[in-house]
Image (cartoon, rainbow, N blue to C red; front, side):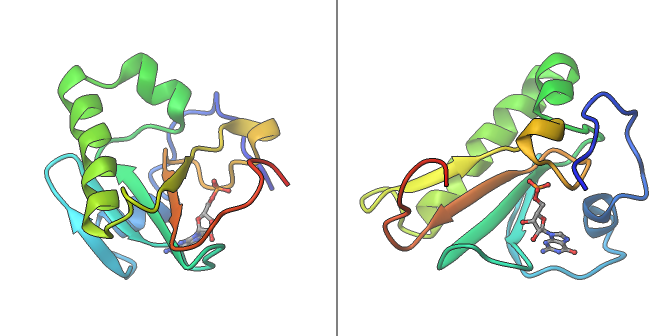
Length: 124
Ligand code: 5GP
């Protein structure tokens, strides 16, 4: 069920629990600003989720309210993860779902990083 991106941050959401170490994940990268881990239901040979270390519901919330250092660190972390998987030369895709029409399910900002094969049309 897609979420309303205007909702206040819910500390009980699944990615908050992963960030707190209460639920395991297959971690691929972590720094002061971001955690990256494999999606539990991958839709491409490489499907990694990158989440910022801060209580932001969506791209809207993050872009409006996060401190500049966290925004910069998060964006850099996404690029670092792509390079870590050697995806720059073959290419890859980033996706952030926001709110109802975007189909966002988890109310903590995350960027999907897809790669490892030609990804087809931008939208199904
Ligand atoms: P959204 O639709 O919110 O953009 O994407 C949420 C993503 O989170 C989905 O691709 C889903 O498979 C993934 N996901 C949901 N729960 C878990 C979980 O507990 N662990 C991991 N690693 N991924 C999850």
